[in-house]
Length: 145
Figure 1: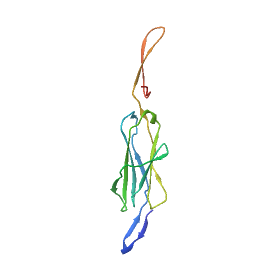
Figure 2 (figure 1 turned 135 degrees about the horizontal axis):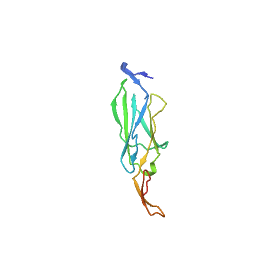
Figure 3 (figure 1 turned 90 degrees about the horizontal axis):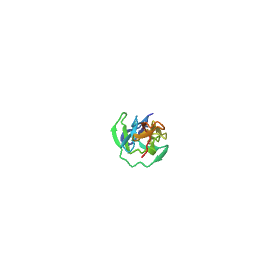
């Protein structure tokens, strides 16, 4: 939906709300303690959008800088990258973002990314009794330290 506003001196200013927001990030497991990037990108809009981040559905402070690229309809594509260091306690946590601007009162939500935090491989020795054989069992995603 485009909203046209006629300003002084016959200049036409077109308001364009964001139509979509995409959140890109890890699609597979992430290693415990590794650096991971999540990038939120809103479609072309005018004026540029404000992005809001959510962790487990709760809004949190947004202090990162925006990246702007010229978009369609004299708009701007807005993106922002969040850098996180997942821990084993964040396994299953969700992240999402949303966008809005003054062209509409609606907010456009992104897809949700769920973290799958992979912990270090744990090697356990199991002694079978009464035979006394030594078996080695590898447990993945165990997070034992």
